[in-house]
Image (cartoon, rainbow, N blue to C red):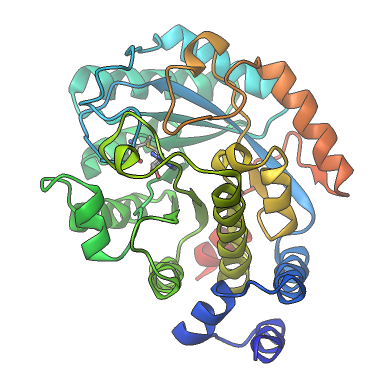
Length: 364
Ligand code: SAM
């Protein structure tokens, strides 16, 4: 059955919801390998065997949101809050540029006040000027007004990541407080598109009560909104969150299962969406040391090495056992590049690595 679906995928035929859910349900090792091989075959054809680096700067853990799964939610009083100043953010972006990363990602908890909005606007402008517009600037700063998105775009940002987290309304409502709305997230994604960004979204996999059909629907949602980039990752419990307190810390067996689901989602997303950029999330590495490289072998083509000052990293714990919190940026660059060469891929140093899908969309 799965070989028939994979043959269809290789012929670039559309897959139905049921077929996508069938692929996500594979557990047989030979069938899994066939799934990953099919995704890699399509990855080579559409985006090549190049891994693009996006240096991620986690510039603040201050957050006005209270998502039940997230370690930096506003009600977690065990977190020591921090906010980098403009110069610190600027310095790290320039470090990423000098380390020949084609792009940086600025991520933080959510804030919608003018002081924060204008600080981001200024620092994006400074990064653009200092790198002569050569460093791609991606933002991941949550829900904002269309006007704010437009200001940041005008200052020099070109991509924006905002995960929908799940497209199942019941699960969405279970993992968020009542005043967090999936409709608002969808409207934000539409606003980002109207503003001219390359738009990225994604989901968490392995949420309580989530089925393969839910995940298949998530993939079809990504297709429906014609997304350019996907950043998705396994849900990993954080002990100081309401969800983390209900779910026991992952055993080795559970970690394996979560990693496998993460890899299957990458593979099936590559098969269905083909010419987009897909990130191998850091959460994969929290489940197994080589998780991100395995993600590349299953269809991902982007990795986001952490370029945040080491002192701040332990304060940006979205989930338990987040990797690389005690490493500095040069160590991350060195060890990752070596491991990527080890799997027969090259790193796209000095390349922004925009998704072919974005250019195709622009031609229309
Ligand atoms: N506030 C911004 C937003 O919501 O887009 C950006 C920061 S938020 C911390 C970045 C992402 O972290 C979220 O989209 C969520 O998917 C992920 N995340 C948070 N808690 C997590 C957990 N326990 N396991 C896996 N991913 C998690």
